[in-house]
Length: 330
Image (cartoon, rainbow, N blue to C red; front, side):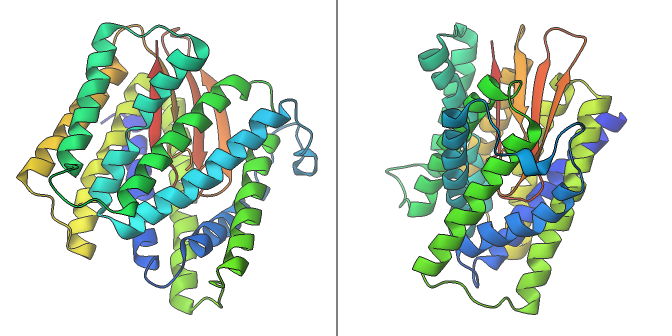
């Protein structure tokens, strides 16, 4: 197995571990506490990885303040929404809805950027949407607030991705990381006070949150290694391996078992998503767990491949629970 593929599979497996742990923490911590502490604990390693030629003390010096603040808002909302979804609905269903992000990204690119999308790509996106409907089956089973927040997280992920496409090359990485981090920390700290959900962490909760930080940080390094040793067109499809881990962790730890129809829907989502990424002439821009604007500060990396068909902008969050969105635009 090529090293890049192994790195990618390992990274996405660890990201899924983070999400499974978050689901377990939801029984004792509010979504505000989970979002706040995963971000806070993840901030420490980020501070020791100062981008070359930049200073964290200058993160507030930005060129596109309106878009960066919009990214901060979409990031913190999406972060809270996906955490609530992980806590309240089966992991496989949360992932299937989060993978609607590429669909929303294309809609935004057509609406805001006047990009043209081929009919085959529209058909693949429609197939992905149909797969989600098969998994969730609205009208045939009761939907909860968790399903709605997962959709909201996908929309926020699409907004964040679209903004990053516009400003990633104009803003410093310190600004892109710093502004999003401040939004998550401040908003969740205020909400913890308003909701009176703040409390001293038990040692089990502290260990769980630190584990998320450690696994997420390791996954980041693996993800970056994957993108440096393999083309984006090879790395990107393996994000759908998270569906497998969602099913596995859900079954082992939370007794969640999709029915046969649900498995068919999940398979359709994976097949349509991978074919969409492999569609000819596609320029792949994926924000792995975009976070995530995900759950915690992100290490932004930009990589341009010699192959003109793969212009890649990467954002890999340190903590889990980020929007699992990847989009590919024509």
